[in-house]
Length: 204
Image 1 (cartoon, one colour):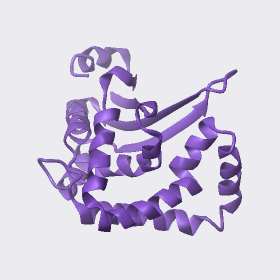
Image 2 (tube, rainbow, N blue to C red):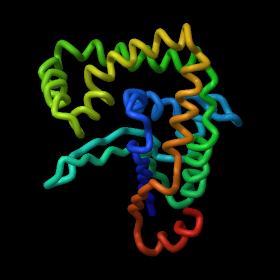
Image 3 (cartoon, rainbow, N blue to C red):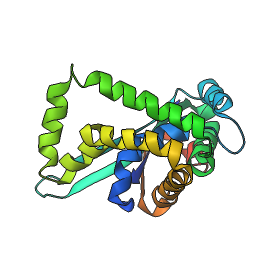
């Protein structure tokens, strides 16, 4: 009676210079609000109707090759009675997020930057390992850009650009949405009991 839903968007559709923005983009989808409701109302709607929705990026090397698979996952869960609303919320955030809120986006970026900087000393060995792996390219480089030192450098630049080059920043996020949110490169995973799947499938 509970549906677990994962939507995976192919990060290879993005220009490489946009990869460091992936985690911020995922947070923005959930924390910026849409053209129908501000981020407070959206957060309340998610909390009331679902067991949570979150986003995270994953990059890994394909076994036996040097190729990498890189995805941005949006994951959510809900009871069957709220499953239709889960789909409606995902549709709203994926297609109608309002990125044009400079102060809100800056707050998200500064929170992310502060969290990463505060973890540098206690987790320095992890970041050093990530940075070394990045020199070999592939998934190692992608992971550094999305969660390592490369990500930190990009966050610092982005925080500055929000103040001085806002139209450029806004265009980047709009471009990311246009490239990523594409059913042609989407993979989906649904975990649900067979009886309820028949009810859920048409809406899905």
